[in-house]
Amino acid sequence: MKLTGKEKSLLRVLLQADWRQQLRFGVEVSSRLVGNYEALFGDQAQSGVLKNSLEYAINCLFGAEPDRQLIRELLVACEQIAPESNSTDSMFLTSAQDACFSVCAILDFLLEHDATHIVIASRYAFDSVDLIAQELQQLSPSDPNLEQKIFHHPLMKREREFQESALSDLLRPVDIDQKQSLIAGVIHSPGTLLL
Image 1 (cartoon, one colour):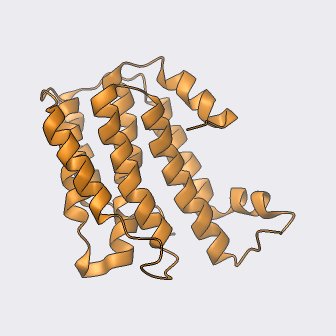
Image 2: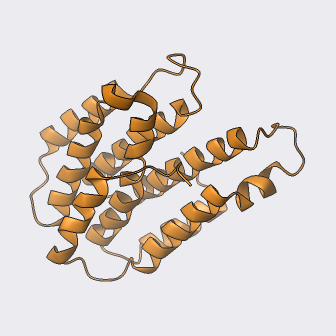
């Protein structure tokens, strides 16, 4: 997958960190998307698959030995709950897909320890907010100010600030005290789409 200039810059920063610090950033970014999946499906959401996958990643972050077979099974489960593109006309559809695929990127990272997967997880978060900002503002794809309007939308601003903050903490050591807050972020994710 081809990376944009900003994504290449993110990758360079991530490569300064160890794999656990990279994974922490990815979990922080991806966990915020679970609420987007729940926004589409409500009570019928199978978000437990996403949450279990992220909790497994957190356990690996804090010392559990990654089980390649289990990771592959979690990947399949996440892919299976991703909504089909034609399943609904809700503006949350793509965000729900992004949540699934962001978690898949984290699981791929556990298999390969390739920081590009963490960059892709970050991309899914920005893509979700980008689309919702377009929908909320009823922007036309031909609007000459489209990118500027999306960039300045409060949801996009908040996502940039969140990721920049998480990135500024990237080189901070990973310690066991962070485990509960990471798990809480997974379990209680409101999503990236709420103002």
